Image 1 (cartoon, helix red, strand yellow):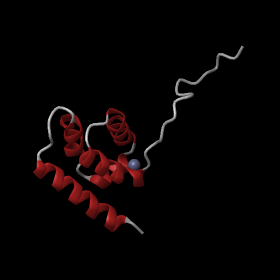
Image 2 (image 1 turned 120 degrees about the horizontal axis):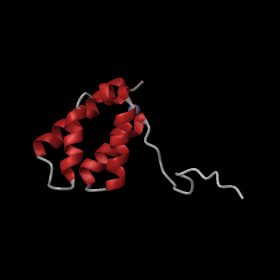
Image 3 (image 1 turned 30 degrees about the vertical axis):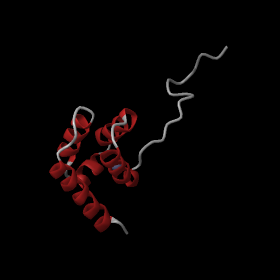
Image 4 (image 1 turned 180 degrees about the vertical axis):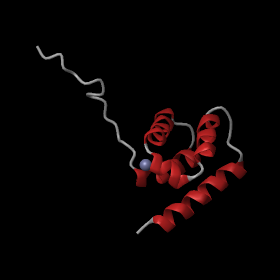
Length: 94
Ligand SMILES: [Zn+2]
């Protein structure tokens, strides 16, 4: 018998990479409430200081993620974050 089964074995999961973060975030912000996606976004931010630094709006993103399921995010906050993200990633892209 082999009991050495990893906790995540059999769970297909797409890890979010740094370059994916912004697209996924757009998708999340624009699309709606997806708990898995929200968890992945938060987990990535928890483990990726460079993204936190690059985004620079981490607190607002977390707030947005937190309130998104409870209520519609303020349009002003949404547009501000998405605009800033687009600028940041466009200018940092080779
Ligand atoms: Zn990252």
